[in-house]
Image 1: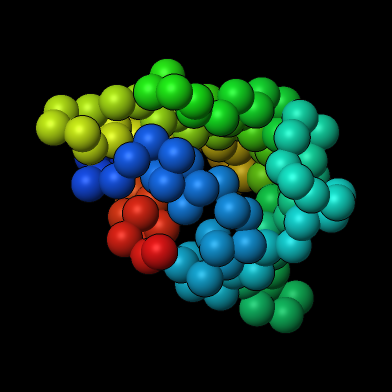
Image 2 (image 1 turned 30 degrees about the vertical axis):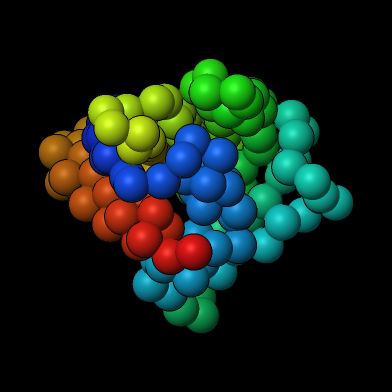
Length: 146
């Protein structure tokens, strides 16, 4: 199991950065070979479940996630979303936080704990590096696209 964190600053209001990062199907638009399906009816709230299916054919894995904390930003206050990863292969959690940043920008903090079964701990350094790169690139793209 690995943990990682990264931060981004975006020239967006808090609410817009939050919207771009938490419209779950958009993640499938920015992560290669991934499709995101929201299982529960909207709007997003605690208990919302969605699945990110990544890969091709028999080499695809499902990352089933449930929203366990849903505190959207309001009136300049930070927002926080926590997802529990409950798939057979992908386990762990992710947190997406938006806070006021310098000059009216938004500071995004993304924290993640990730375990891919049955990868041995010997693979942890590679998984940490790959996770930070893939999710960091996804966050960049989500924040750039309206």
